[in-house]
Amino acid sequence: MGIVVVDVMLKSEILDPQGQAVAGALPRLGFNQFTDVRQGKRFELTVEGEVTDEVLAAARAAAETMLSNPVIEDVVGVRAELGETGSQAAELKETAAQA
Image (cartoon, rainbow, N blue to C red; front, side, top):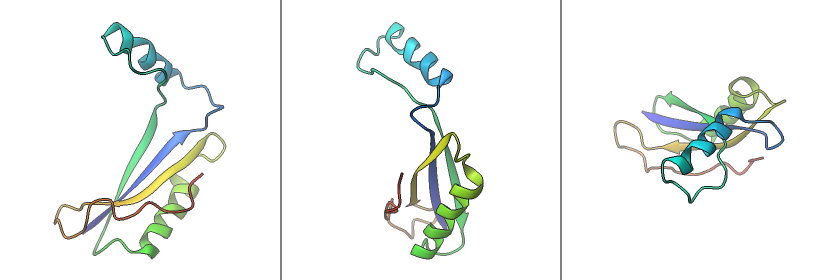
């Protein structure tokens, strides 16, 4: 069993009120190292068997078609991750077609 992780982020020109709220709260909690925060979404897609190049391509197509809103969001990562069975290497590869 394999897992494909898809990361989606708001485009840089889109206002991110949740990220701004977190950025404002961090210094009050003593975390002064961070200058900006952007929030996003993470999807975990489970597949039977190994995560192949074809599976990653299908996951990217699904991400661009359904998991993200291309008007305001970018798909920033599609990668394989260690499955529950431990039969795959962690984070096999990042797809080359990133925004």
